[in-house]
Length: 336
Image (cartoon, rainbow, N blue to C red; front, side, top):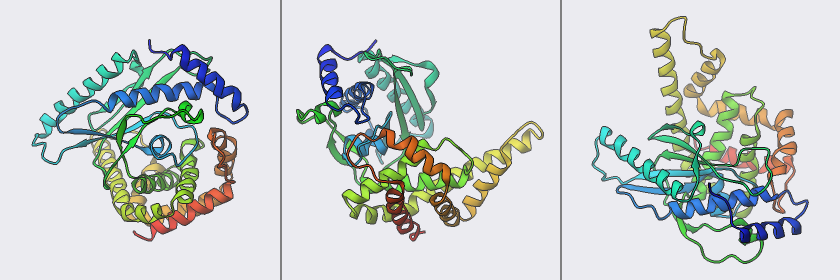
């Protein structure tokens, strides 16, 4: 099973000792090594009609270096060539073969497939890979790869993908480059994701992975305010995609309830909230934004969980972070 080398352990121990109290433990640096080396290997993968694009919050952290917080997993877009010429059935088999190549790459790196953690379809699949940790951990050491077949709206950028421990130790050199999702597109998707989640799941207490978008938007706007203008050009398309996903969900609900009356059980309120979103997404997102500003549990999640993930020097208060997020969100909502 895959594990890091003795020299990598020595560097991690050195950094951990120097940065005690900076919320960056050895396990995080170890995980980043595995993430980085998996990305380096996948960046060399050649397959007809397919290009991998790195994105999401891990992309903001590792490629663009706009956020300094712990991120988990790897978000990758599977981008198909416009002229692939494959039928739907052929495309399904084409992507299945591609994912088998991904599995071969990860196996060659000595990762072990976590069968319980892999699921999905060719259009959207999550793979979970196990490694042997050199440090004590309360959780099973694993790396998540999330693939989604979806074309970027903006041109991608080739960015070097380096190691976090090398960066912190000021010994970083040029590394392999990977096509990365544009920051403006990621920002538009993150703002939509947070507000959509709050609109549809107002009572969900598991907010940590959603509250992260508030901090990330603050960091992006602080580093480059022009990214908000870029995100404005993408926001209507992002929300339209969300509406389409909810329409498909509601169609499935209706079909199942018609076919199996009395057996199919759905969250009635959840269905109603999705129907409201489809009918008027802007109104739903605005209500979610307004509710979040004064929501005690969001504030609590920000201070008790989110701030623990930040290892850099930029640690805004919730009020500071949300003010920037709100300004950004209102600018994007104006486009609907």
